[in-house]
Amino acid sequence: MEGTHPLMHEGREPPLRQQSAGLEEGTTVQTRSRRRSVSSGSETLGGAMGPLLHWLHDVAAVTLLKARRTLLQAAILFCVLVLLLWVSIFLYGSFYYSYMPTVSFSTPVHFYYTADCDASESTLCSFPTANISFMKNDRDQVMANGQPYQISLELEMPESPVNEQLGMFMVKMSCYTKGGKTVSSIGRSTMLHYRSKLLQTLSTLVFAPLLLTGMAEQKQLIEVELFSDYKTNAYQPTVGAVIEIHSKQVQIYSSQLRIHAYFTGIRYVLYNFPLMSAVIGVATNFAFLSVIVLFSYLQFIWGGLWPPDQVRVRVMMGDDTRIQQRREEVRKRMERENSQKELNAAKMTGSVNESSEFQEDGTAAELSKDASVIPDSLGPDVPDSKEEESHESDESSSPQLGNTVLRQRPGPWMSL
Image (cartoon, rainbow, N blue to C red; front, side):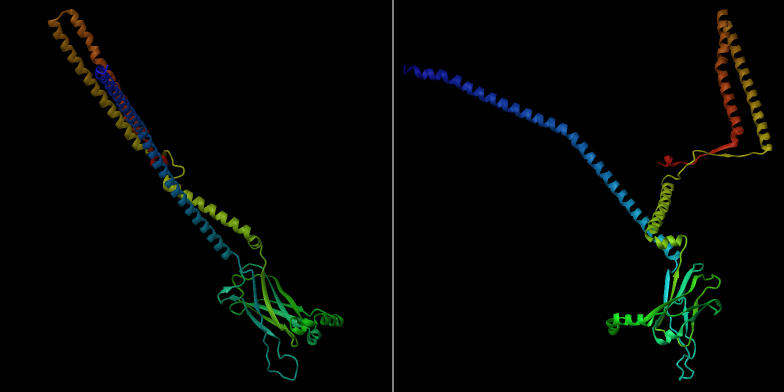
């Protein structure tokens, strides 16, 4: 048994080695096949993804280009709109500044009087007088031509016994032009408001603290309306006025001359409704400028809003020219007919000669065949002559129809 074991092992080892070798070869083949399948799958996937990636790249490039173009157009449109809005606001402001006159004007009135009389008297030597200028900065007029104004004088007067005993007094105003000519003059009367002794005592007791501290004074503000509807003349504009108080005993703290304009029509709307007027004015200017810019853009890009398809111009010709054209047409027509007759005669003589030669060599049947060739040979020429005649007739008729000439101007779609 011991001797048999080595042989048995020797006989069994080769099959085991063969099996292991076969298994290894099988695994290697499987791994190779797997690698090949994986590589082929990856190649197939790469081949399928390549066009898709190129398409995505093209789509992204086109989308980016469109986005940039859209953004640029939006930026240009925004800048144009902002410019139009700014121009609209500027135009409305310029119109408002030039069309609306000064609403109100106020200036202090400083009265002067002479002092060359007897000083023992308590009265003034002359009436208090003041000269007022209606020019701003010595250049611009305060009052616009044709605009109605209300002119009033405010007098701040103390409740002194002299003013109470004064009673009524006159205030006169005379308007003059640049040359010193008086164009308008008016006078109004006024006086202090009456207050009884009891009312004066009570008001003094009530306002005693304010009167003692100087925060209140015993005075009255008298307003005298001189003109209710004053209009300056464009040919003789008012540049100033002289105010005179016809009293030598009047006592005045201070005075103010006030000029207020009363608007009508568009000026009334602009003054009393400024916000609504501004919105409507700016919107109107913006719409008008937008239409102008749009028409200009269409004219520049397309060449016109309504491009004409055809512009017909009728050229009228004289009678002599028409007669001459008709004569030329008749002459050309006769020449064509004569040339056509000569050509037909030449063809007829040629066909007769050919038929005589065939009679000498052939039989009578051939002669009949040759005779039948004659109209066949003439047949194709007849349409040509007709076509030539039709062509010539078209050419001859073209001058007759030449009275109408077509002129075409390229439209917007042709330029695109």
